[in-house]
Image (cartoon, rainbow, N blue to C red; front, side):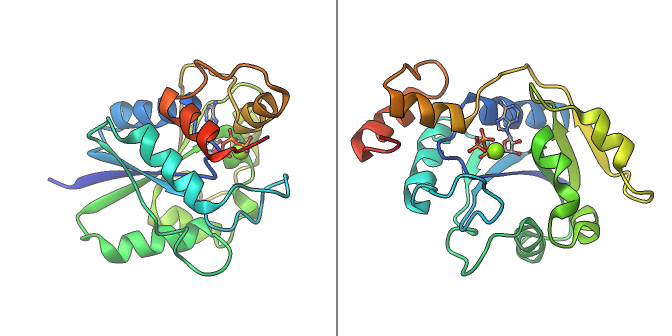
Length: 198
Ligand code: ATP
Ligand code: MG
């Protein structure tokens, strides 16, 4: 039997139910053995200039996934020097794992639409099967229409529509608006204790 490992990359600043639902759905639909969450190190494609320290984002991801036996968190990107590239992460995982493990890289529709701006997209497709989770506000039809020939290894995955984003959660904390029910309670407690997003 081949092993099937899901990889969920993200800034996770903070992690929220949109991420967790996408990972859970991938686990089920693709019969994965595990999903590993990989918080980014230096997020070069991020639009907002200030990203929380990697250690805080790592800990929030651990807190959010701790109660799920099939979810784990990797430090590989936050411990790596220099900018974060998904292709490096998948290459490292490929080296680390036995050849009998298949990789499934899970992204939301917005990240998938940007995929051809990533480093070495062709190699990305060789290293992993790509799963594009539907996300409110992003049209995956555009991706399918713009996909160059020879890169058919992407599956669109329908997930329950959750119009939750880390950007909105940060803005809510800054404005003193509620974030309850958008993310796990333990993560909210961590945000308060660490004084994030104020
Ligand atoms: P930000 O607003 O800071 O960009 P985000 O909510 O988009 O944060 P990221 O850490 O950027 O979260 O996302 C990590 C991955 O999770 C990306 O592939 C993204 O598309 C996906 N994702 C995030 N939120 C959702 C959601 N609500 N539904 C489906 N996929 C999501
Ligand atoms: Mg994002």
